[in-house]
Length: 176
Ligand SMILES: Cc1ncc(C[n+]2csc(CCOP(=O)(O)OP(=O)(O)O)c2C)c(N)n1
Ligand code: SF4
Image (cartoon, rainbow, N blue to C red; front, side, top):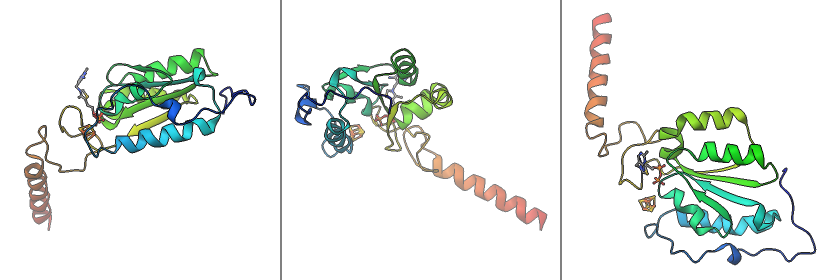
């Protein structure tokens, strides 16, 4: 890891010190709470000084994350966290850079930025909360939703799959 480690004479940061004064506004029972707790537990173990840590998110429920981490951070724009973390790492390689995103944010609207983040292969940490749906906008399908999932944006999903199957059945019958 290229990030600057903390001075061993300094007292170690605790998980509690990473909790902010912001009200956590995810739905009761949302899996995002568990990710937040785990990250706040793990970061002190890395021994990286707080001033060298930055969390950057896009847009979505998952992207509220930087508000809840007592570090540097930025809630940016939809799908563009990839571009911002690339800039941070290119200009300040000593920083511990964390990108927080959702399946919709990174794999759908931010898909083009995301593939270039992978191509550049920066030493960043990516937390991609894959809940297989657009959560914040109340449930449209995402690139990781299962095939045939009925959502507000795919109300006829099962009908279309049925028609495709019928079509192939018909083609095969014609060939035999
Ligand atoms: C440019 C733009 N387009 C669309 C939206 C609406 N929007 C907000 S969040 C979101 C999808 C988020 O889904 P995901 O990344 O899976 O995050 P989740 O909310 O599930 O954590 C969309 C389409 C927006 N805010 N900005
Ligand atoms: S809508 Fe879904 S992802 Fe968003 S806070 Fe509620 S449970 Fe979590």
